[in-house]
Amino acid sequence: MAEVKGGINICGISIGVLSLESYFPKPPGHIKNPSGLPFTLAYEVIEGLTVPRLLTDPSPDMIEPLLAAARRLERSGVKAITGSCGFLALFQKEIAAAVSVPVFASALIQAPLIHAMTGRPVGVLTASARALTGAHLSGVGAADVPIVVEGMDETEEFASVILRGERNDMDLAKIEAELLAAGRRLIDRAPEVGALLLECTDLPPYAHALQRELGRPVFDIITLAGMVHAAVLRRPYSGFIN
Image: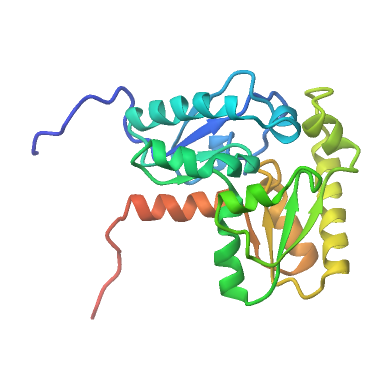
């Protein structure tokens, strides 16, 4: 075997995650629950950066801790970097410029691709429609994409646990029901939507139920991470010719 270059403490990590600080449950399908995902992950937690703070009070002083964490992930050997909240779209350009590996800070970066594939408006289900701004879309190159937005702002379980951080315990069945209700509201308003995009990283665990309910493709941070993983770690194909 040829000599292998060293210098990495833990080997075999594909995706690095810039992680907000949160303590509610992350079921399988969540980017912060590696047990159910088909790629290996490493995490850098940005202490003090919470969902409520990022959504309601984003500020430039968040950038440097994010960049420092991204650089640590790169030094640890990850092949690409993502984030644990779609609202990190605000800082996509700065993070990507700070490292040499691919960065996809938010699931929203898929919006132009989805629109190109369907030729129809993209339905965006977001943690907070009130907090999602043009700056977030511009940050990921999606400012000109026709989108229809539905938020989880007025929910009971999702809003109290995730948006306001009132407690850490969470009823997963209620979260799923609230997401399905939000999806139905979006499609009732805009039946022309060709596909759904989950901005929020807390929603992919319920994507299968959403698709079953609404019959449309559902994209999220996990679909994007899987694509990036496949691109940065290409493997030979199996099969045969004759």
